[in-house]
Amino acid sequence: MSLLLAFLIKATFAQTPSGIVPEPVSMTKAAGSFTFTSQVKIATGTNPEVRKAAKIFAGQLATSLKCNLKVVDTPTKESCIALQLNKAENKEIGNEGYTLKVNPSGVVISANKPAGIYYGLETFMQLLPTNAEMSKQCKIQSVSIVDYPRFKWRGLMLDVSRHFFSKEFVKKYLDEMAQYKYNVFHWHLSDDAGWRIEIKQYPKLTSVGSLRVPRTGSFYSMIPPQPGEAATDGGYYTQEDIKEIVKYASDRFITIVPEIDIPGHSMGFIASYPQASCDGKQHLVYAGTAGGAGDNVLCAGNEENFTMLSNIFGEIASLFPSEFIHIGGDEVDKSFWKGCPKCQKVMTDNGLKNEHELQSYFIKRVEKIVESKGKKIIGWDEILQGGLAPNAAVMSWQGMEGGIAAAKAGHYVVMTPTSHCYLDYQQGEAAIEGLGGGARISNTYKFEPVPEGVDAKYILGGQGNVWTEFIANERRVEYMTWPRALALSEVYWSPKSKRDWNSFVPRMEAQFERFKNTGVNYAPSVYDPDIYPVKNQDGSIQIGFRTEMTGLDIYYTFDFSFPDNFSAKYDGNPIKAPMGASVICAITYRNGKPVGRLLRINLDDLYKR
Ligand code: ACM
Ligand code: ZN
Image (cartoon, rainbow, N blue to C red; front, side, top):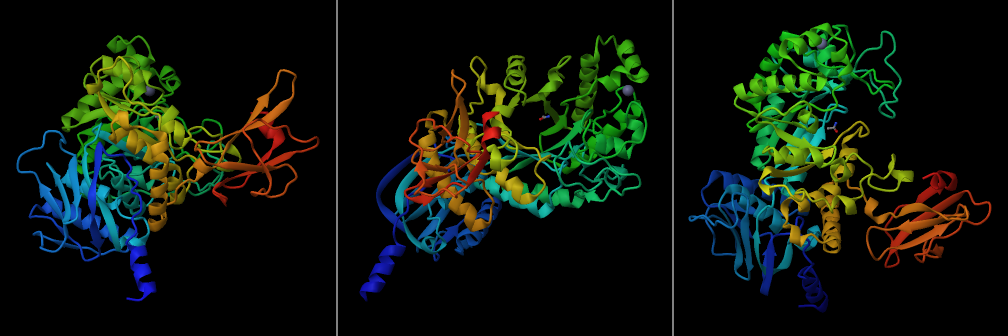
């Protein structure tokens, strides 16, 4: 063997440190290693769901690491990844857990249920190097993993109303979720800016309600629809699309929870069927116009509305196997009900003291409708106002308080407070991210879904929410989702005791390499510093920097030149701008290489923060 060849073989067999997200419950390294090559086979046994999971995993491996593994039924004599459903239940790991053993002779993934096998495979993927060439022939250190989730609801919500995203994109998103062991896709299918699901009995919901005038710009400040302007922007999913996506999700062990947001956030509905609102006038699907033109509500005194909702939820219930249907319930502008004789009559007839109780009346009727279709309701925390419907689960978004109140009253709760879980909030420096930095990943990572004094059995789990008023395209959806959804995957899956930001950072960075391999857009904002004004007692202002990760060097200039590692270096103490300076530029380096993006900020803007 030539020296060069020997060197190459050694190099390709190099071990790379694994970086598993979410962190497993326990992982013990052992002596020796398994030699992985693209000749390794995946042996599934005869269970069709396990076989399907293996095929999906093999497909992912082929896409991300260009590594094509054969899927076979029976374990072979040659090295293989053996997938085994436990004959006797392993009580420790539950329905979604698994054990994964890597030995010199092979890999064995065992689980009680196919979901666990699938999650074991996803963990195995993360034991492989992120480099496609290296992954085709590498050594994986022997290891024994026992793993299972902390919470049973590990969700992401995608708003497809404010902006519509294609069926193909939704599938890609589901793939990304499954790789990080998310199991709930909350699909926000209707809102003021568009109705997105075909309902056979009410075709106008989509022929009218899915389209608005085309606009680009800042949502809530868009130019109003012009006289005679055609509504051409939008889209919807046919029932065939929905069935296809529900199956795609289910094959990846993801439940889709559909949301029809009522009685507020209903302009898609109302534009299609004007008699549904209190004033019965023709309104338009909301195009993000300034000045409240997007708000209206379903009339609580119109019986026809409840008939329509019964028919709509009937179709929804038959399309989605989920136990829950999300009925929205948030941000209802009750002034419409205050001014409506029909609504006021319902209040008098039913002894309702105020519009909060009218909302409760509305939601309780919807609960009965949804239950008659064999489903349970979940709604945003406003459904607590005026009294919670008897069996409703609550999604706590305005903070933890709604969730705490609901859990104390014995209702199930999904925690998703704006403070940590709103993935539409900006994650980095305002000068380049858009709106102000609202939810940095290091903060998201600190999220604790179980508040003190609450019985944990009522906390189903949590989710991240991707509202899309300010997310106009699919690449941006990914940018806002990742890597914060990595942080949340660990919050929802891993034991609380394992939460450790410094251990998470390199594991997150390993996922960045995987994202590059699969063309997933992710935000590198974690490498950019926060810049803040320091206002002194004597009226002078200095400039401070903060980073989320250790090991970053910050370089800056005030003279419009692009900073690099020859520029002034921030030493941790706030600095004073030279007289006359109007702009600061800054960039981060690590180990002598630029890792952050160029930040350029007007000092006047900075000082106003
Ligand atoms: C919400 O953010 N309106 C639930
Ligand atoms: Zn009314």
